[in-house]
Image 1: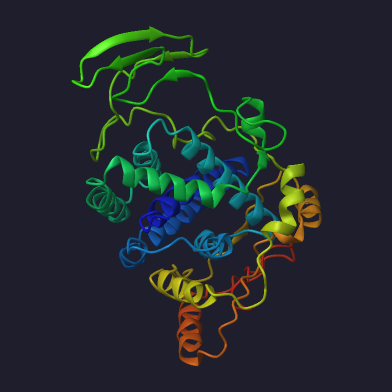
Image 2: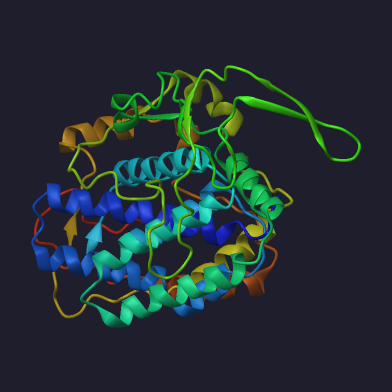
Length: 379
């Protein structure tokens, strides 16, 4: 397991979250000023300097529930609110999209180019906010500094760590199903065509060498694919052509997206359930959340600015049905970490949670979902 995986996981999932929220804000005809405020507030919180400092410290990945808690807080860093079912769908879409990108990376190192594609798109959301742009550019510098000198083997370990994190997730996504890159079991279909990784040759030839390193024989074979040589390597500079589309915004065409639990995922639900009993990583996860969320600066709503609810489903009825039918074992609503004996650490986390509290908005109506999610209340 690589201890350098967390920044790449967080930034890429965060990029996918912003793509989805942007699409839903446009689909629900949220006024432009409110939509910009939501994206600006989330991006500003996501790229906060203290938060990034904690994120880039070498550390193991923790549970999906621990990371989900961070994204829940991040999604509610502005005046927008999501119900539990919409938050579940948002997280499902984020994770499946990035899993697909990691699987299709031509080289392990290309996961860095995927990250840069996400950062390039994020900068497009905040082009009129120079202060936030500077935050994103600073994160780019940290990425270059941290990952620029890593070997191919180290990147392979990072890719392997990411795939282990995603291995039990087989949620069907309508866009992937329509494009025939995902089958009915929720597993992705890997292509047998297109450019090969930069620096490699099109398959079809076996070379044999003697003990002096001289080629003595070669044999051709049919590989069954339709491969071509990569025309150029993607740019790892601050500005440039990344050379691949993985990590770009697949929702820019305003396509509706649905998710479905596959049969395999339902059968695996009992296996993936996280025990509520004390476990050896409980204290580490608590430390992780305390450090990571302690660096998050949530923007407090100013004055009497009304909030609004965003629905990731077409109708409220679909959202309610999704909440009822989602297997309980796959819900990320509460992280149950037993660490009550460490009073000092609990008090520190309680203080951090208090600082992160978002002031309730005055109720404009009794519409469901106006209340803030309180995922951390039972921590």
